[in-house]
Structures are given as C-alpha cells and as structure tokens.
Image (tube, rainbow, N blue to C red; front, side, top):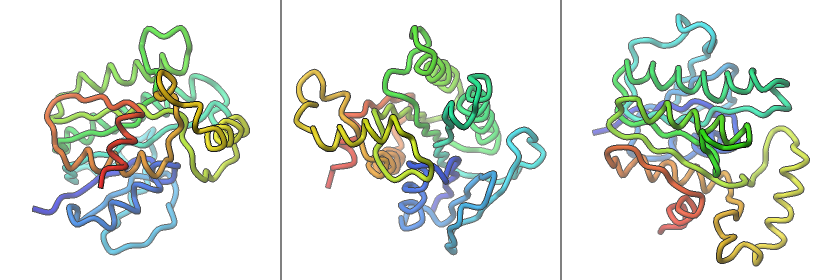
Length: 221
C-alpha cells in the first residue's frame, strides 16, 4: 500500500536531500512539505503547504501522513537569541509532532544532536536532550531519533566554524578511528538516506541512532 510522507524542514541541509529521495521512492505516492516559504521544487507527488508555525489554524488539519520526517532546526546566528532558537528547535518540532499524531501519523523521525542530554552542562545538547525526552513521551507506534555528528554538505548559508571543521574532517579522516570514530563528520545526504531507510523498517517503540549507526545504514547496499 502506498503511503504519504510529511516532511518539515525541507529547505535545510538534510531536508533538501531527503525530499529528493522521497520523491523518487516507490513507497510513497504523496509527499507533503510544511514550509514557511516555497522550497523551489516541482514534482507530481509533491504538495507544499505554507504555514505559520505560530498559528495552528493555518495548518492542514484533516490530512493524514503515515510517516513524519522532522528536519526542522535553526542556528543561534539566525535566531539571535537562545529563546528564539528553542522555540524553533523544540516548541515548533513538538507542536508538529503532536499535530501529526492527532491527524493519524504512526511514525515520527527527528534529527537531534550527537551529545543530546537533558542533563548536559552545555546549553545546545541540553536543549536537544529536552526535545528528545518530550518526543519519547508521545504515543507514536514508532519513534526514531537520529543523532548525527558534524554535518557536511553545501548549505545555503555560510557557517565559518562548520566550514573550518568540515575541511578538517575531510582532510584528516584518519584521525577519526577507534574511540574518536563516533566524532567523525557525516554528509547530510547520508543522514537523509539513513533516515529514509530507517522509516521503511517500521520498527516499533523508540529507537536512537548514533552517527556511526547512521553511516552504516547509509552505506548499506
């Protein structure tokens, strides 16, 4: 039976790669992208729904999507303040998860962070850990939490720190072996590929995937 996929964050690094995969796959006959602005992609299977995340009355209530891919997220550079970043990364993501559940979604997949922990001494991984803790409580049949390390790929906006770290990761891959292997950077396209493949497994319950596991899944023939 063909399915409908819902994707949030289709303009980001992973989301833009994921939507290419979803549009070409045979498992889905409809892809719905929730966006704040047009994503610039045209395809017979793609349906764009431009919404205001602050106003749920603008959301497409009544639609049903079996699988929800949540790739939403921002940076402190864009958000300016931690409170604004928290709103996007946590509050918006949770609102979408709860709304999709009400609309009949069965599987929720979300991108988190490698060191996510609600008990972290650092703000960013603590924020992601809080997000994970709240997502785990939702009564989905299946929840997949992806924890990639540094993401590589062509972003629409320039990020100096990530560009430097990415160049180092590509130029010195031999450094990331043994205990350091879990810190090895991963291509956004590989995260997208693994996300899609995880969804097709339809494993029940809550599952957390490390960056190493994501790479293995992406490399699987």
